[in-house]
Image (cartoon, rainbow, N blue to C red):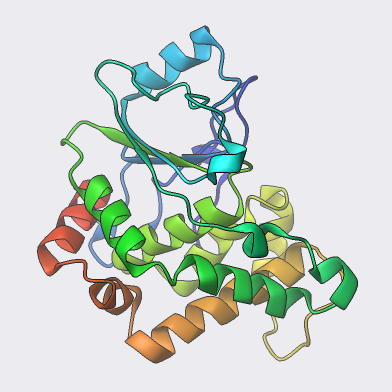
Length: 245
C-alpha cells in the first residue's frame, strides 16, 4: 500500500496538498508532478503561487460550488499560461451535514458521493480536460477542503489506472487523519465489523470501500464507470498515460 508521507507538499496558505505520485497501478508506478490534489486556492500567497507554478501546475480544476467561489477567487483563474476549469461536483443536499442528526453517517456520505457521480456530462468534461494536459503539465484539482470532492476525483484517476482498492481508499482517508493513523487502520482493517456511529477515520474508510465496491459491482471497474459517463477509451488512455508515463 502506498503512503501519503512523501507526497505531501507543505504550504502555509494552502492546505491538504498531496501529489498522486508513488502509487502502484496496472501500468506502473504513478509519477510525481502529474496530478496534485488540494484544498482551496483562495488565500494562496504570491510566493507559494510561484512555487506551484514552478512545480509544473499548468492545468487547474476548481470543484467548488458557485456559492463557495467568489468571482475569480481561484488564484489560478485567468492566469497566463494556465488552463482553468470550473467543475462543481456538489449541491446543497450533498454538503448539508444532516448525518449529525440521523446517525446514518456511512449511508449519508455514500448518498452524497453518489450524487456527485450522477453528473455524467460533468464527469466526462472533467476527465477530458485533465487528459488534455501536456506531457510536462501538472494538473491541480481542488475543492474547498480537499477532502470529499477532491477525493472522488482522485478515486477516478487512480481507479482508471488500475490502482488497488486499498490504495484508492487510503489516498482518500489521508485527508481525514494522519498518515500513521490511516496506515494503522488499513493494516488491521476488518470489513466484517459494523461502522461506528461517529464521524471519524474508520467511518470514512467504510464509506469509500462501499462506494468503490458499488462502482465495481455495477460497472466492472472505474474505467467501466468512466465509459458509462461517455468518456472514450482514447481519453481514458490519455489520462492514465499522463499519470504513469
